[in-house]
Image (tube, rainbow, N blue to C red; front, side, top):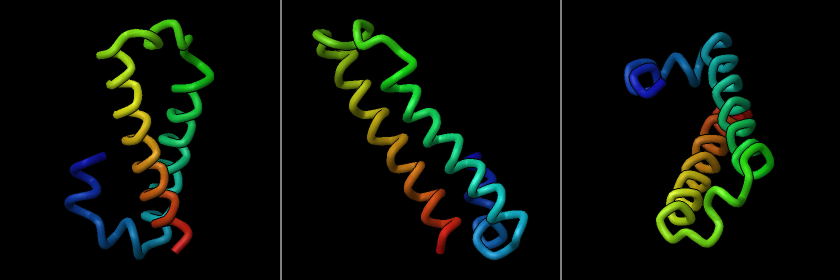
Length: 75
């Protein structure tokens, strides 16, 4: 995914197929964000400093990826 974004950013933003790929990536990361909160037990990270920090950092990463891909599709 990273190589695709780096090597073909113009095509992802300008072509119909690229827009569909971007939409798929946005949906994927949004579902992954949803699973982070509702698919995994909070017992895995609550009350543990390192696990809570990682949980927060990855939540921010998945929010960022979801927003970037979905906003690219809708602009």
